[in-house]
Length: 94
Image (cartoon, rainbow, N blue to C red; front, side, top):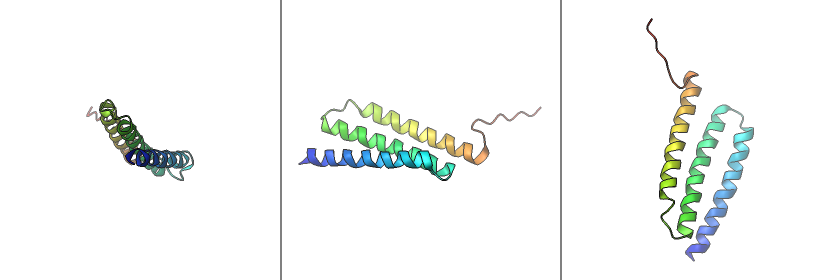
């Protein structure tokens, strides 16, 4: 029973990722594209976790943590770029 539920979840997240890919490509604004990219990162983490459960292994936990960290850093960098126009500020007081 659990295996069937996991497979249904994988299909749901795959469909969701495809819809988010369309939003990433079409997106009416840059903010929508950033949100879609962040949600795709979350979906990728969920898909990896479900595959790990399906295969009954803990080998993918490091990959899940790495994807979470990279997704968070990417979202913060994109938002900072949208707000200020630059990611790394070089304040020179010359």
